[in-house]
Length: 129
Image 1 (cartoon, rainbow, N blue to C red):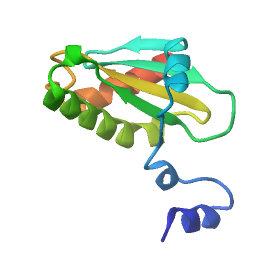
Image 2 (tube, one colour):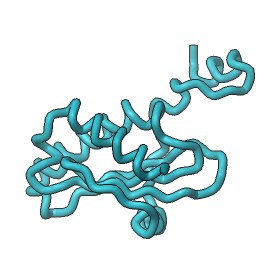
Image 3 (tube, one colour):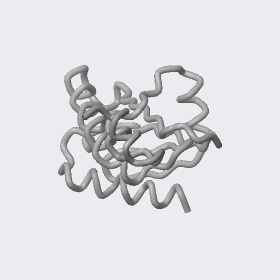
């Protein structure tokens, strides 16, 4: 069953499977807009969030500066951030919001994965208060 078929069977209510692969931010303007929105720091990363005020699915972006480490360390950190977002945002993200996960030095690539998931859930709750 494809996500489109699943969505049709639920009478217009989108299922979590539809948002399993969130739309990824690619334009600099979207990252800048999110940086001017709400922010929440966690042990393993920073969360930046911006309410677009529309009904589109949540979008997510990932960034790790050279402070995180060399290319291998940055890519590892971004892979972990992508996986955390893939697992958490379908259930805790809100429609019409942009989220940017910013990697932290010596934390994003080494922090326990379950702790990263809990941090993202906690950060999302804080941002949506």
